[in-house]
Length: 256
Image (cartoon, rainbow, N blue to C red):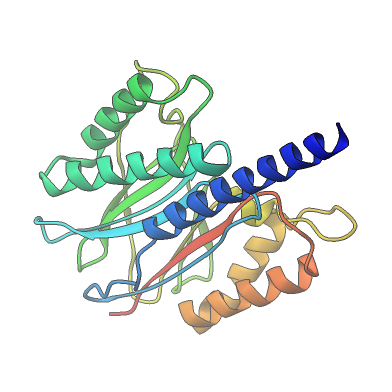
């Protein structure tokens, strides 16, 4: 009868709402409650999940080597499955780094774990980096979009990219770190593709060109000004249009 159908529809809707609430709670628990303070660096970070609850997260860890680690990851899918996979990845990264494992071997192990434990259609892209107080660092990009490094001395922007595979897709994949360096005033920008894929009412994407223009114009004023300009530009561009992917970014400035 119509009443039975209506009741079933109502129950299904409530079940979906409970699942979304659980997924959102899980996702929020993955983000740091406050941003850490590392010697000689300023850190800013932002995450705006979609109404579908995506799988972006970022995190930072102080390592026994004196370096610190930052990561921004984008998990495929939506809802509770993406939130649970995010939790698995973050937990594995934390455990491996706290044991003193080198970053390339950390991702080799995490990749093997995901290949064994995650569903066939699930995968993770991430940009992971390590920095010491002097600004010497290493990074690995596992299928993630490029990060950008603004050079204060020259006003130029370098692209940090590697050709590594997504995590969780191929058990034969191997990951290698690459060297980079931040000098005083340099700013590292790491983001998920939800930022560049954000759409306005005309279904036009924000795009990398706008992102690079913002970095070029605002980075000379420092990381705080750049973060605020990002937030303002996204709000003005999207004009409250619902987004279909998380918008996440991390900005790191070498201040000494």
